[in-house]
Length: 356
Ligand code: 2P0
Image (cartoon, rainbow, N blue to C red; front, side, top):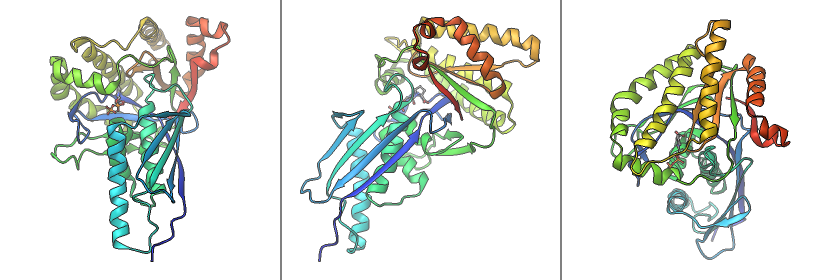
């Protein structure tokens, strides 16, 4: 007799992560394997997050899959289709072994995801979005997979998503096996390791970026000689150094590596042919301001750096800094970029102070 087929439903949320060693380039599009390792900080869940609900339609006859993003139905990409198919296969294997399990593997799947921040504006929305999609499907299909496996599945949806399954400081080791089994995210230090560490997000533009990451990094891999240098001669050493800096809570080293890696990522974008421009004049002014501020503060507090900037595939700055310095840096940013505040749009400018 056929097992019970109640509607199964699950909701999950996942936080954004912002890389300090940037992922940019794939060695396998099919398996979603990167050309270099990367490292990020996962932000506080209550600040920037995606939330996804997944419902298995019990009385459906088809394996239809539908997706709503911020309330609007979207076409399902090949990658999400692949993620859904892979997870359904895992469910089908379970059902084949145990006929008492409800039949969920071949039912229609409705997925609805929302972000509480601008989507596709270079604020890592795909990382949090695909991470919680994988968690929600895992729950709705009652798979109960271990977290590293959910992380590997999230990677199929978007590379950087594999890092959002863990809190604190997270590395994504590129791995070397052709099947990708050793290309996995790993927690370097938990969220309690360096509680003074804060992130400040300055939104220079909340519009969607012109060049999506996936297409951009593919052109970079095909055309940029600087990327080859970065992969072989720069990132491996930087991964080791920044892990050491994190373990030792050495902010000066952490900040310098972070800023250098952001600069090199954007240099690689410029070295792509045709070039990719993610930074704008506001981003350049933020870099100049932080550079000058660090010089001035150094004479006062003896530290080499007080603030580190980093930019992803968009013009918005993420500043990493220690808690005691947040109030002054906020005043500084308000003084130098008064326009949004004067226009009463301060809440559009800052998406809050996020601790790790
Ligand atoms: C990162 N970024 O490490 C880097 C820094 C953007 C700049 O991961 O093709 O959206 O889905 O794997 O993950 C953006 O790339 O690209 C990204 P896909 P993804 O966070």
